[in-house]
Length: 97
Image (cartoon, rainbow, N blue to C red; front, side, top):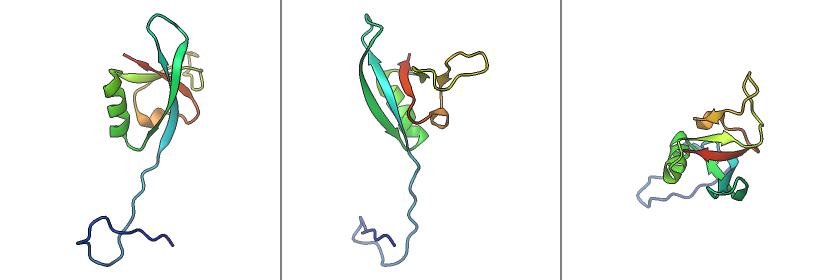
């Protein structure tokens, strides 16, 4: 049993459903425009499609592209990931403008 304290003092005593969104954590490389090697990496955790879109938008990216070839299409090409549903945990990505 999990006990959750109310965030609102005006909430009535009772049973409330607790909804927890699934998360996905991915690693993202950052580059200097003049150097093909990654400058640094960060781990990004997204809970919703809105989180993912906001992360891309803040950096001026339209999507992420797999860096290490963990998920390839039929032609063997690394593909762009437009939706959070297509992200794979543990795969390294870089942003695409």
